[in-house]
Length: 236
Image (cartoon, rainbow, N blue to C red; front, side, top):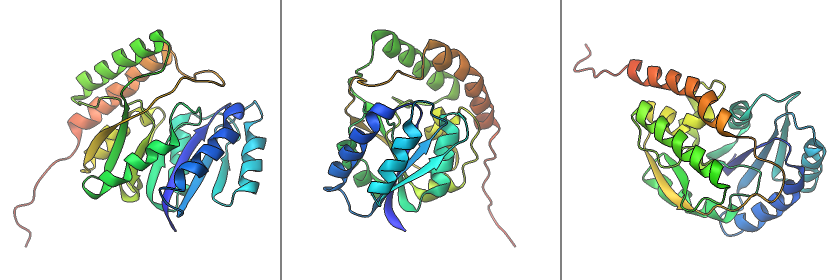
């Protein structure tokens, strides 16, 4: 058992992994020495698997989970959540666009809330990606009756019990805030930093950010409308 489990999906991010390890270790020095980092290799084909194994051999706080092929980000998160031993589970990407030092902004709010989501104040992405993300976020909020500022931001902190009840399906990582709220948990958003991608290529584009996720959005909309809500006035 430890205080924090940091779950990070990895898909073809070989050039960023060693830097990510160093950045995480430096950031966690001022946060807590009771933590683990779970790197979930989602069927990488660029040598990321071998680098993860090397990192896990060098750092006792690093653990690796390895898929036989690419299953997607939701599956990677799900495997990480089930393996997590921390009381608080933190999620982030492996592409170095998030600063591990911003992890310190999240736990302070977990006394008042069950989930803390980061939102990127200033996006450091190409204009087409920023526009597609804004459109996707607007549509997602409109159709799911939400007001999440940046649902696609992966830097989040969850009390472990919030994740234990979640039954995830492909593509559901985009809707973590809505799914935990459906279970009755409270949520707040905090501003974080965002940086340009230096290594590798983005796994998302307009097609899979808007059109592919639309089907998933309809499923979440249905779930939200049909979710059981009742109060018991007496029980004899």
